[in-house]
Image (cartoon, rainbow, N blue to C red):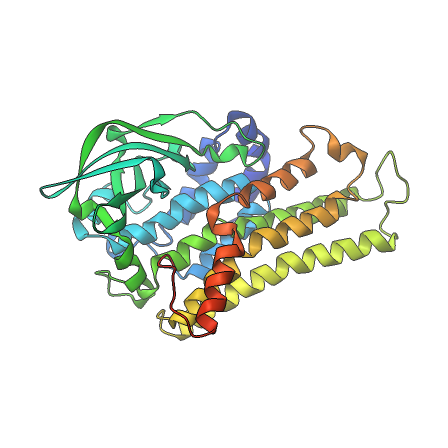
Length: 370
């Protein structure tokens, strides 16, 4: 699948509107729905594509080359169909009842959750942050700790939660990553939950082997791959504007420092894209059942994208000209968007590097979200 030029142009045209309104424009959502972007991972039995992850993420990069917020929020919504496909059939029946283009947001951090085990399920309440694209969704996946078990994800209908407008940030404005609040405990049946160890062990009821791939290997890429597209976007802006600086006439396409920075920035981003595609092709060659050591490596590789794209943007920002310091400058917005992405816990490589090295040295894996 490839996103059409018309939809990509629409994303570009609506990017500023998204920043101002702090949500993705509805006609962009509708256009992506018509492209089939939201049912890439939906099972064929519900009208979906059962697509490969590498194809999806190449589309996400292309979207981010026009607007990183759109790629981030809509990518996260779309990728949730993969997790839904791993859940109980009854949950799938409910989510896909209105068609394959399910709109599901998430917030997996369990820190604000209250979980009480009851007969047949749990009573769930609390507050969860960073639920990207939630204003467009009618379901949410929420993280919680079940006493005596550990982390579980709970699928909750929009009628059982409220969205609190908290998204006033330095970047990724259009993602509308607001808080999800459940004030009065709601009952969530067991069939509408997903145990972390089931995701780790590849438990599911599908026939297509693509769903053998552990859930986390898909999700960890959706919160960093859009940064690759943002760097490409910045280089496109640089190519169009270099030499037009009103304050420094040396910033031209003939400046060797500028040329070297562009080359280094491009290679940082493109090496991330190549690694992502290569990793998923390795997973496919392994029948979507990669060895544990490879899963640990893939998680570490994904976590490096944020730092490398920040480095790329820094190389360019230093020579972007005096206008780039003014609020609302398009280049500055991209720089801030990429830095915002790094704030996601999945994009901090420290713990993942430590775990990878530990496993390489013969130790036990300590990460069950990979």
